[in-house]
Image 1 (cartoon, rainbow, N blue to C red):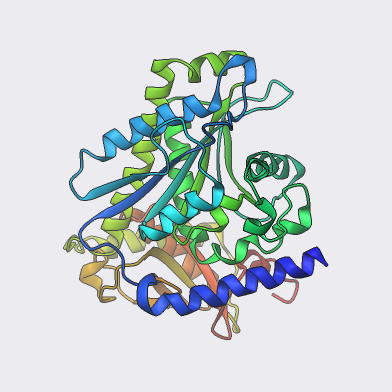
Image 2 (image 1 turned 180 degrees about the horizontal axis):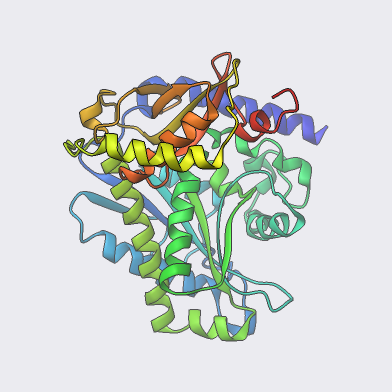
Length: 381
């Protein structure tokens, strides 16, 4: 019965959001890029206190430092879910981001475990892929128990029940690509610049991510329960370095977003034929058999944004055969349209060489997007 009620609750949210969409959802902030920074826990919710360190204080210090750097850019507006040691309910954190019609939501936390686990990991919303991811999400979601009348606010959602997570991905599904891209950029700055142990970009069912209507990530900056890492995160040096990595990840994302959707006009098209010829040789040498899928169309997704621009080659660094699709609040931009998988592989390499490092291949059948790996690995093919 509880599960049935939860599904009804999720459906009602979707229907309500659809009514809001014409009035608000497609009107992004003009002239400013809005980032909501969420310091996890706070007030009577200390978070984890591994080795005596306090997650709520460390997360807040990191968030305030990230925000201070972002605020130096006049075209970026920063909104904080909290700037002091106060308790903010999960539902209010999401509401702050939604009311601001934010472009990004970033929640910062510190991890814990009974083992010697250490390193950084960045999460996007998704059904937990393993028990460990479920446990992390369960721990962060259990903060709802600190709220009065939490049953009425969260309509039967139970952090301890895997069944309660089934509906969580519905509201964030259209932002998964962008959230994953942002998470990867943050994670890369942790591991490549700071040389932190890379625990990867993962999916898990975080309630606070589920209820935000924009690309959203949750950053686990390290394990307080691992003494060397806890001491590092508790230090001013560690907090400043972690904050700088998050800041750089956010700026990398914004730079790619601006560049990929034509904020500037690119004229460097002279050498595209040379690049294509080199790619042809490289891909052909690795693929001796033609791989054509008559019922499938492959494209290279270059970018996704709330900005609508003309799919012209001069807006996409000279790349031709550009198409645009609207999906929810976002416009998605694609390069290529072919049933030949070898050909789309070549186009993917060209796209990356032209400055789209996070582009990727997608597949469509009967006009609907399908899982690429299922197409390529299908016995029928």
